[in-house]
Length: 384
Image (tube, rainbow, N blue to C red; front, side, top):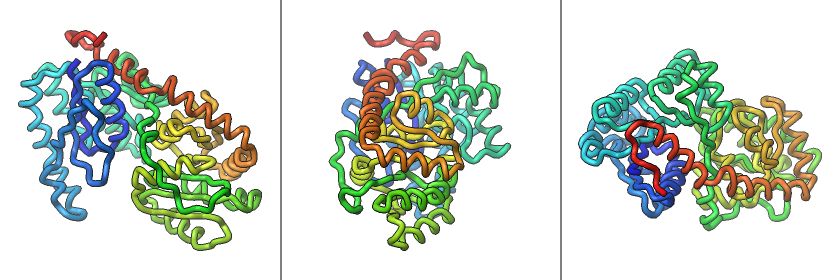
């Protein structure tokens, strides 16, 4: 099959690259359309054609004006795709994000109806992580605009159907794959003491990710395990209060807290994951998380909250412990319990890796995605 993946802002490049590589490995011809990365990225997967066709002018604009420039350029970038799509006639287009909502929806309807190319949409966030009536309406309109919608959890599927009114026949649950490409990265160890228990929270720091809940829980963990350390690493997006509190706790050397509030290079992200005794995800809400699937791939024990599809992965496959959201006492108790039990952590680590290589392997995800593409009338036969 000839497949075009589209991720205008490159918001999920690890996912895009892994899916594209798995589809190529199964005999497909895959092109990824995205914007040029503004930070260092691993090289594109072998056999995948990557074209940077979005925001080539806007990304030359400095500072905050870049966002406005991207909004102005985006419709023109979409229209500029038409000649190539008409010439190449892919068997399927797979859209990952809709940055401008109605503009994107209208454009991809035109592509499907006029150019005659089927379009699949992945709702990476089945529901918005900052839900407002307006955002919920937009999420519903996005999902209803496509004949086939992929979500990454049963929770996400139920949300689209029951809360947003999407036709069940259109919604297909395909898990997020484990980000096993991180296994090939040369790790850089974090600047924390050797031999002490380490809890790590990684990734972009947003309010819905529950940093404040973790900080509320941490004194109890430190009291029970005086040598335990907490490392929080990632760029802050919309959580200045949490960041300020984190830095205040880090300044108090007695708490064993380290903050690294910047974009984490891939080598350091992997090094911190591998050094961590527990990867913690204290989220208030989410559907699924790339950090979770990086932890699976690298065989780490996980403590997460019972939100979105986390329990479907962590609890079901024995990769860690889930606790109620917004409950610092329960979070602290779980962290203490897991940190005190090396044998249990070893079993969780093995379960994480087994899940990554089994139900969350990219070959399984690619095969399921091919079946969604093939549901459209006239789509080319699957590769053998």
